Length: 188
Ligand SMILES: [Zn+2]
Image (cartoon, rainbow, N blue to C red; front, side):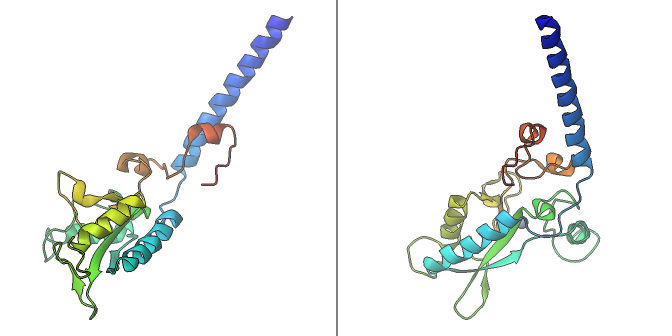
């Protein structure tokens, strides 16, 4: 009798697990594309600007969220349209499309945008660009300048360990199958 009850319980639990995993994948496949920066990225972007200013460095965010259409247009630059190639990512292949990346540049006192990575406007003896990168890393951003293939020096992203393939499949930062199965709301 006890044994039967145990088997019944295990079977019901397995059914519950299977249903939850299927629900998780249905939810992923129904995910819409974001249309703005992820709230955490938005928050850390502001912290980056503030903390850079505290070090005597003014920065501008030159790019943040990008729609699929905007990404496709950017991809054409230097290919079918004029200009030089600025991205290797087509629509849906960039962290910007998921609101998880920003690009920055320095700004001089007279408001001029500076791309010079050696510029030391606050006279700290260290290039301002790298000081900003250090602050960004302390805020958990990954820096595109560390990439071996196609380094992207203005680029900062907060990907929560997700690959572009996972994002394309519907995963978003904070997704956790176990939390989903057991209805745990971890605040994401
Ligand atoms: Zn970027």
